[in-house]
Image 1: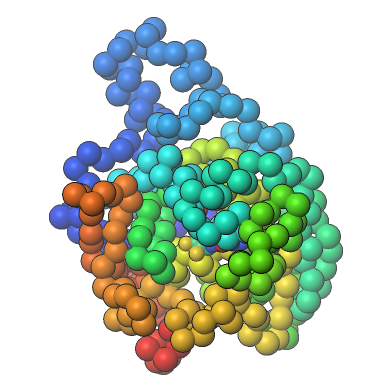
Image 2: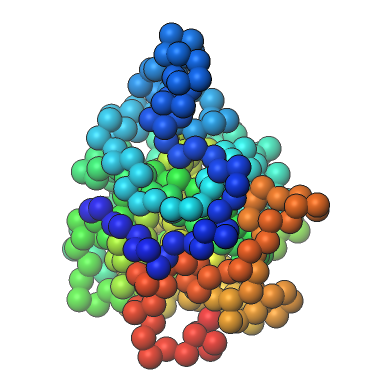
Length: 337
Ligand code: MTE
């Protein structure tokens, strides 16, 4: 499905980062071709698996992704006026507590996580429960590239081109029963490869778990991602399968998923259980509800520095209000934060 993000979701032009990064390989090659002449382009730039974004190393995708890439709908959802966060920041400034609490820990420690083979258990209130191999799970779905804003509850943000398919398409395939009201997700438990899970000082209990209401899970913006920047997901970003819910704080976007359960009751959600006064189950991006220890009115867009903090106003539902506000009609979002 082609989703056009309507104009009201667009960021005001005053927020356009002047040194905008280019968005597509076509544009990149066009620009490079003009500047250098096509003959001067390096061989990899013309190959099928050439990097689509700067800073992404050329390389071969895993077989299950290589089969899908030619049919991908590039830029199916755009973020007009937004500069895409450089790949280096998106892949080296991460939250993935299974690999440690610091922003650099996931990139430093996640490389050894085995992501092939990978299976996902789907159970609970579904007509077709099962243990699905990743490639079987993905095979029926065409991939789309979607450029989404990501707003962390810690008040930093990025703009990331994800590769994936709507969670709704998978859920329809497994046939939720009439009792299904929520969707619960779990991350892998693998203390051997996830040092954060061996630590006695870990903030969180494992597995990392998250949940959505069924209508949120079925919303066309809710994405299951298998890649980013035209590539397979780096391990530190949640390989091989993660959730992306762009109107919610980033902690809802659970990484390295091994289980999806359809439930009648509201599921356990890791941060919500850890500190319910600070992290709600809904976790919709909301500048009107501050975190008890900091404001949510503003955010710092990466890349930034002490001298160039790159601050901007946070938008209700992270700029996706037109698409999703209706899901919460009649709710008091200061209470159900
Ligand atoms: N998923 C798992 N399994 N473990 C985590 O620690 N951190 C969450 C979310 N998903 C997390 C997770 C948080 S707090 C954020 S902001 C995003 O992942 C960050 O995603 P990124 O590192 O790809 O930017």
